[in-house]
Image 1: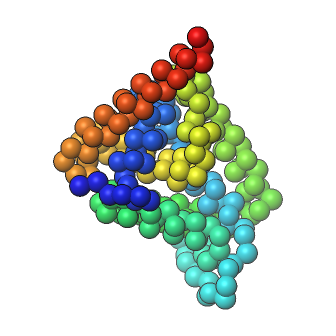
Image 2: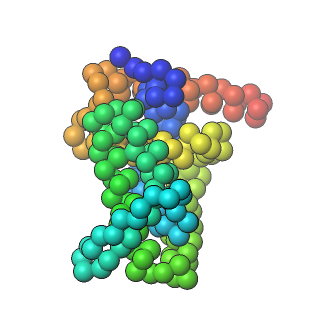
Length: 202
């Protein structure tokens, strides 16, 4: 029942899962991945609008916010649509989280202003990335996935941790047998990686 090519969820999940098999490393990513996405949306709020699309003005919690259809918006849109294509159920939840990040980060960006926002984003990104590299170096003992496939790692990370959380908390899987199939692929990939590592050391 798996899909193929760009929206092959098993392939993407197995690739990312092979670099995140340690439970502590997975937990670290669950904590830090979405804040990275959120703060990326925050700084991209300050990019200029694309095309001549109208702005949307909202009032949230007593604060006005202008939503721009800029690079940040289209990035969020691409992520959201890709996640829905991967899995309509979990993907729709991920899409809602992406939309929430876009709106909430726009509100925070409007409140902070660029001069303070970029400093907040810089600190948050450094903390979150440091935490993840510690997870890989100390617990996973394997380099991050982004060193082998930068685009796939960046795109899959938010969805991977969400799917992991849904599976751990509620036993969710996109379709029967998904996790068993993915785990077999992850085990095979990790075995191959360890064999290559031993050859390099010998």
